[in-house]
Amino acid sequence: MPVFVTQGRFTREYLRGGLAKPEDRHAMIARVCEQAGGKLLHLYFTMGQHDFLVISEMPDAKAASVLALVAAGGGGITDAVTVQAFTSAEAREMFESAGRIAGSYKPMGAA
Image (cartoon, rainbow, N blue to C red; front, side):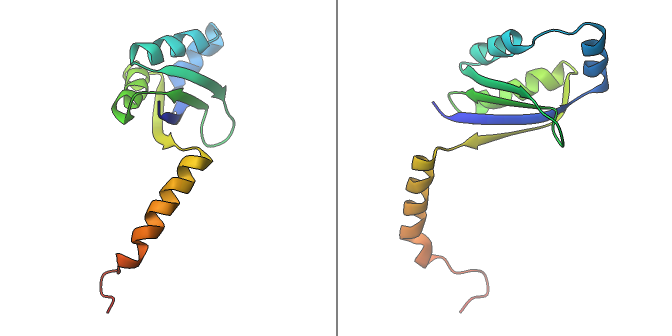
């Protein structure tokens, strides 16, 4: 199954709720992943530009987007970004495919 990485920020309401009643969110997020047809691989709380990082296996990008929609709809997160991740072997295959057709591409205005 494809791997997806979702990052985002917590809303103030989420932070207030966490301060008032801290809880381990792993089981809840794992359940949402499963309901969307996938599996939670890792959940991290991060410092810096983003507050969390979710790594999941999902059937496709549409299913992966469900995670962010559910959390954002519940008022817990904002500024969520979901991207598909590729292994180094998959990246090699992509580079090989791109290399085979790269010579046929000319930028706009090129002679």
